[in-house]
Structure formats: structure tokens, C-alpha cells
Amino acid sequence: MPDQDKHSRTEKPTVRRKKDARREGQVARTPELVTWLVIMSGTFLAQYTVKTAYVSVDKLWYKVGDAISRPSITTDIAVAEQGGKDVLSCLARPSSRLWPWPC
Image (cartoon, rainbow, N blue to C red; front, side, top):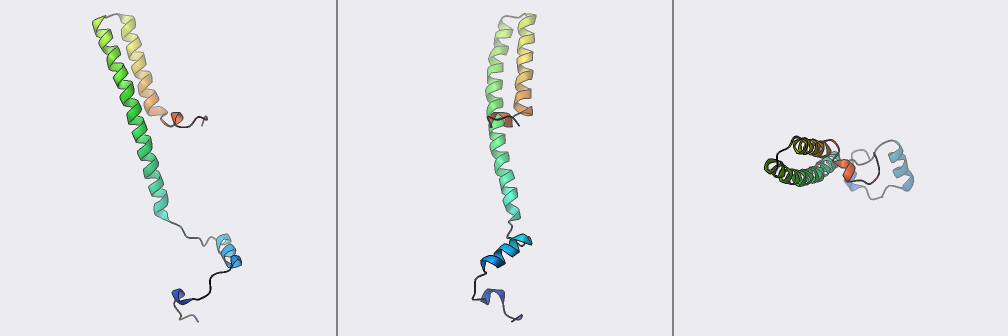
């Protein structure tokens, strides 16, 4: 029996043997699955972050144009403050906009 190939077995494993194998940690694992999940989630997160950053920079350029056409210190500070907030919101918390519940 030991010299038989494992593919030549005719009987399927019983429920008890499957349960025992799971308990002992003998389960089929795919190490690439975790890698693919990380790559996919990173791709979607990067896409969302870039899209959000593009919209923020687009709005900021319009505000910069207004600040240049009508210069004042309060307008300049407001534009710089908004730009800083946009950068921080795009980089520090991109995932908080994807899920409605707090982390």
C-alpha cells in the first residue's frame, strides 16, 4: 500500500478525515491569493487617491488664479490653507472615504 501513488486511490476522504485534517492544519493554501488581494486593493486605493488628488488640485488651481487676479493676504492664506488640507486629506486618510464607518 505505501508504494502506491496517492493519485491512484479510489476512495474519497470521509467527513471525519477532512475535519481531522482541518483541525491539524492540513488545508490547501494558496500563497499567491494574499499577494493578489493586496495588489488589487492597492490598485483600487491608488486609483481612488489619484482621482481625489486630481479633483483637489483642479479646484486649487482655480483658487490660485483668483488669488493672482485679486491679490490680498487673506486670500493667499486661505488658498494655502485649503491646499494643505487637500494634500493631507488625499495622503493621510484615503481609505476613510471608502467606508462609511470610522476605523
